[in-house]
Image 1 (tube, rainbow, N blue to C red):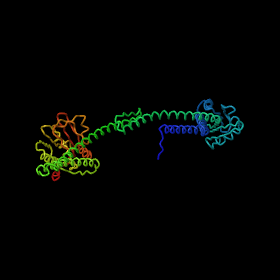
Image 2: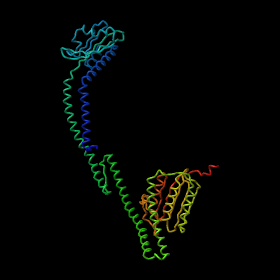
Image 3: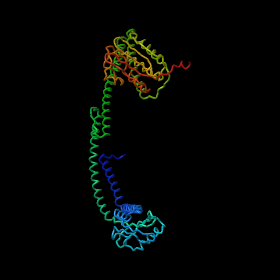
Image 4: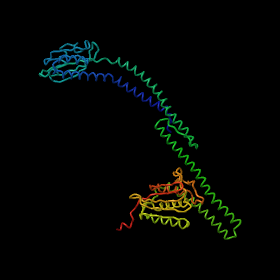
Length: 475
């Protein structure tokens, strides 16, 4: 099992580790590589000075240029002619100048390969045992504009760095202690800055788990925690709505189960105790029992159906079908049962659609059933089929009822939700129809929706992909 670690400890370990890394990095560059780094930089400086002197050989004031360059770079210089004789000398170092404290012949022998033209330049490292001093010797051949050849020898002393190392080591120790102390303080500050809003969110999330959906989550101004807080606020709001719908669902289902069960029991007792020998009364009561049993069966089937639609979205069989004929068939089924209703069908096109025809039939059945239940006293339901755009068919199912309030529109697709604007006549159905519609159309990625205005009725709609009429393929 992974060991848990507090934010404060994790931040502290991270900052201390980063501090140790920085100190080690400084130690490496300032202590371990100081000597070689210094030698490299000094060597590059001497070579650069030699290059400048060689470039100045073509000038009129060659000697003054040499002095200026030697002074700026803190080097000494000797100039040999093509016979090895010293023709010019610049001493900027005094006793530190190795080339001026050695014999002329010794320096000529060192520069001999360059003077003879065997090389164009060379670099040496010498140690003066008398003064325990290291020096860099740089020799380079130069030619002026008249074609005269000369050789320059530069000497740059290397200062001891041991004393500097000791100073840097002392400073690094102090810096390391200070950085670690700062890291600990920063870790405490950062951890508190991060952990306080997280602890607050955790505390409120526990309240959410216990059913308190009113907690207001705050991320403390930290972007990532603010996003978490917004997500939890959204979840709490959603859970609150779900809980409200759950209670309404339990109440509605309990009512719809209780009513037919009560009637079934009552009529069964009547048959048993009173009308057992009266065939006419017994048959009427048995018909009531059968009808109420059918209502129970319808409720159970709808619950099973919506569960299947949500869990088996892949079970979709798309094919070409005559949408106009399907609408007319469903209208005929309703007309046979609701003879006193006026169901009007208007089709502006004769098109075929491409979708799961059986499931679209369920959509149409539920929409029309919903319109029949909620239409106005005129008992009129209008259904329209027309082309929407180039490749889509649009279906409207319109009732003349009291409409749906704007705040209720997002909720009507939830399970077992019924609009509060019901009618005086009894509402037939389980309250799951629109939820089934939502599942079917969502699983097929088909657009759908509702337009409603209080006092003017509602219009439920959906769209289907258009498919060419199969008879046209023969033309």
